[in-house]
Image (tube, rainbow, N blue to C red; front, side, top):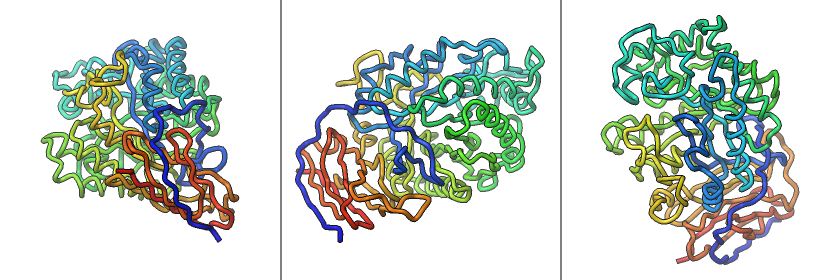
Length: 478
């Protein structure tokens, strides 16, 4: 029978993790590592939206990776811009991808995985955004008002026309369809990264916009089933098929439309691929427009439920790849708490400012200027304390719940492997991040079914012989 153990541990050190992160795949609705342990991701976004579109050009480097690892983060969503990959039709810039690879390697050296994200906002620079190259932007000569983000989506006819042409797979200047180019560009990226265990997957397209079909898509609880199940699903299948010619197994993440969190509806069809995951974003519309968080709870609950129902029905993992983008810390905290309740990993927006598609780039940042060390006034410490919470990074079993509130972290799991009936053997290790900012004076551990030890900023739980379940409570020392 498993025994209960209790131990008092000193303050965690500020040392960061070192060594490559474990390769991440999936088992049913869970992300898993090579041992079959459930992997939970906590991290941030790093997307540089102006030429040369390289995170390193924004100053992101080893000191930033060190900072992230020291605070318990294990993943970064790294922005890859189509215009950077394919500056001319069929011509790929491998020097650009070498720079992305260097960022991936820098993160990996500190135990941090990368999710590669083909990022776009407002389609192209012509519409005050970024993403598609100029040669793939067909405005039709229509009205192109300077409304900014996000209002160009709703009132810019030229941008909507560009999206329409993309969804129609209209020919590029070389006669090849725009989507064919996009798919081939993704294939080229996957060919470079398919053997890299530090890349946990590919997110096909950030926040796809329906074009002129957006108005019916904005109907609450209905959305746009014709677009989701038609052009969007067909597009995802096309890109997935191209990637699979060079990478048969890495997880492909796909998103609903930009309006998902506002209408809480999604009808994207199955991609017919066993290695896919559902990526979703949460931005409470009332908070974003008014700064008032009071109406967000029921809206965010519904968004989480919609995302979870979709993923669970298809037996694929879900991952919240954007939220936050604000200094409204109660809003950020409520989303983090809600993610814990739903046992969903997340990547917050964003690590740095310098976001040209935002009216308040510094309001989105955790570190104001990545060209400067991530210390002192360059770090929004109050936001860091919200984001750098304890959480299970790798679970030797099937999680049943975790939470963190007022200095107390709780985790419970069975030792049964996900996707089967076999148990992990005694001594199998579950890793819990214990960021120093939450435990400045150390912490006390009470565990049942496991022996607890501390390695750096990680609490390790080694399951005891005969333990069918494990539970642990970590309490900050006064």
